[in-house]
Image (cartoon, rainbow, N blue to C red):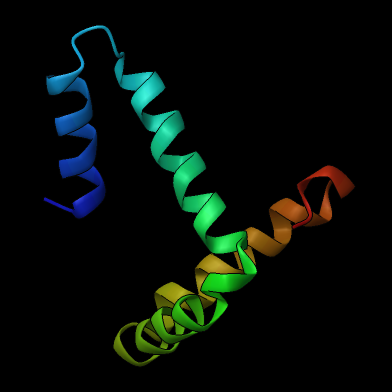
Length: 78
């Protein structure tokens, strides 16, 4: 189980009125907020360097997919 999966499980288990969809939204928003906060850029860069060493194929696909998504709309650009 990933940390994200565990967090989602805890959120929906401990908050009886929270739906799975709402929990997904909150987790994704928290991740996006962390990644785009300039104070966290050094940590994000360290994580990306580690992923590039561990699984360069995954990282390359991820970057290409994100680039493809963002090229379609100026509203998707970070």
